[in-house]
Image: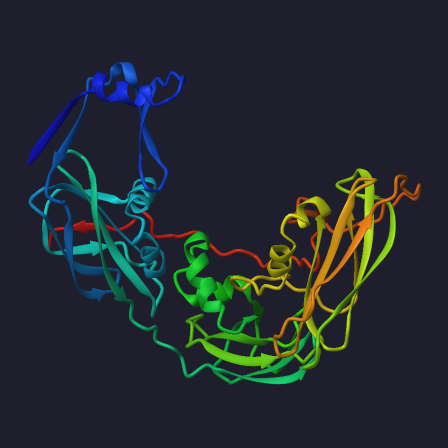
Length: 441
């Protein structure tokens, strides 16, 4: 172990000298997760740097026996103590790149703290684990100075439940329009009930990995139950999903349950909405429909109303309104930004069909109205731009009608949220935090 001891006055003096006239009186030690520990500078005697071997706790897992499992935990020579808990594997993997976050999570959740080795110990408290689900036993170790050091994880999968029969659901696409999909569901005699949820093809697994930790999903089935519709019988059922996007593939996850409410294997079915647009040049027409007062968060403000009309070759399009002073600084950049697909699966990125909306713009203001469409083959057409200067006077018409909520566009102009629908209900919070205990055999 090598020590480097620096005078606090010397080191802090150099920090203060670089502060350019400020007078700091706190020393902050900031972790990668942006948490920090604060010290009053007048009470810091010295700042010391040491070199030590990393502390960690190795794990070896045995078989699961009901609500217990055999676990061996071996501390490294510099390890003084460690936290141990069990969590869904999807949540554990999110902490692999954020060890500091795992320490914080385990401390807040009341995870067990240990300062000894266990050779084939008994880990109890596993009765709430879901069947056929991947979990992880995790350790977060401290060295002899109390430093948060290494984290280790050992993954395991719980046994499958004893399913009564072979519950499954036959799913068939009955009808597809540009905005709806209708499926028929026919469960077999072993189904006591089933859940179904629809999403963009290839995105439901991604959403599970992204949101599982937030909503407490232990497996994909939990997400299907939380976000899906439940059919509490074993009879033929038709279901229509509305407000979908044209030219898009979707997937339906179906989770069946047996008479004891055990989950069967997840089933996935596919369907595509009808085509919109053609293979020619996409183009979106722009028309100014008036300049009058409108309701913005219960306040009447001047609004520029604009209609957008795509041609018959347009499958989807994007719109924007920018201040002319901003647009003129980089017109090519603004045009390129408009002709972009979303960086990830994102609702309401595109518009479809004819729409009319409004933007909150003050009088005597020059703006550039923009629209660009892409055809059914995904090829972008020409960006249509229209310059418009709002009048000095606003129409006296008062509009108290209910409107879509406001949202600030990239150009700082207040617009409307278009096509926003109510979201799904959320899932449950984790139930395993701080419950498991490791004991000697």
